[in-house]
Amino acid sequence: MTATATAPRRPIDEAHRRTTQVQKDLEVASAELGLAHEALERHVPPEVKHGDVAWAIGQNASVEQKVQEAAEELEEVTELLREEQAERERLQGELDRRKN
Image 1 (cartoon, rainbow, N blue to C red):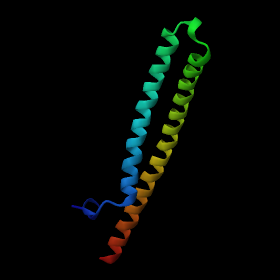
Image 2: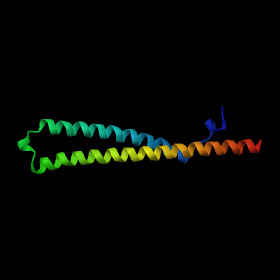
Image 3: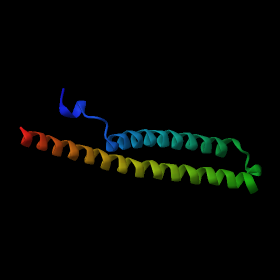
Image 4: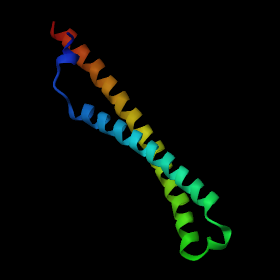
């Protein structure tokens, strides 16, 4: 086993794991919101699409967009964490080599 495989879980590893899971959850939520919005647009008769109903349909679309944007932003953060993990592992390997 390598030193990295046996090392205790670091906070950055846990942060990466969590951001990856949240990103997946957001992607699923965005898809579900998109399906809900399509169903509302398709099945709610035009004569009913006013007032609170029109507002709710608009809000659904707005929330879907915000969730998509959050998922994209989180994808970037997850990638930054992955890069930091790789850099830490590289530096740890360098330190280990210098000790020997």
